[in-house]
Length: 408
Image (spheres, rainbow, N blue to C red):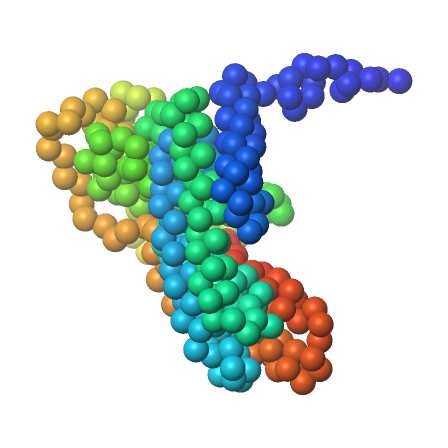
């Protein structure tokens, strides 16, 4: 019987690094400190302070700052909305239903339309308002609305302050170095991804791998936001970071486009797999240039002008090489740049905002109908657990569920 998995070095705790242990210790102390301060201040729900300390805890200081700002603004906005809705609409159940459903659908739309801290702030504003207002449906004292709201905000702020204090006592790793390392690793991984996608075989893992690449690039956008909050030099280079993420997404799209052209290609050149392998190896070298890449591409240059598929594949491959080479140069400029150096990449739109407003509107409509139907059932049946059920429904409906859309 093999029991090697019971050894300390094979457990998740034994494999953890010193930075991970430091993060876990800082998070645990911050949660205990927040709970103790909440009990000391005699807050109504001390566990909210502990929850806030856990939520805003990140391994990097930029993540703590950005998440804390989003949580504070979201809590304040949700508290203000709950005071307005509960203070004016509780006497009329149907007016209350349409008011809270409208606010939650608005928060759902905005949180699904963005992917950065704006999304988090409005998601938090939505379910904060739901938690407060649904818990006050049996209240007859208007002063209780204000007391409950300010207690909720105090608990959130207490947890955030405790998390910030522990971040100063036990500092974390650098956001900037983590982001630059992630950009370089993704830059090289795109070559491995291209080699796997340009194979003739069709496997279920190809789609999963492509989705994983896109998700990781979008995740690096969150890391970019954290690095901008904590590093003055990267804040001045935010346009370059945004441009680099756009370039990596473009490379991913070009890789998928070349794959679609190669599938079921009856007259493909016999030396195509060998040339592609050499081309990707050359792109992985730090001193490569267009001349060396062109010599490799020349081996599969289409000789028949009427073979449009061959010509299209060749042009796409050349476009991919030039894009990857340009991204390598911008990465090098970003590493060696000084605070005084002037670097201006081509202008691109912010990667943090989704352009598909239709899907966000669909999710907002779903939230509105869910809350409307739930409140109607609650009003007609006088269900005792209606407030808890509607709170849970609101939290589940408003949370964004992003998923990359791809075609292979």
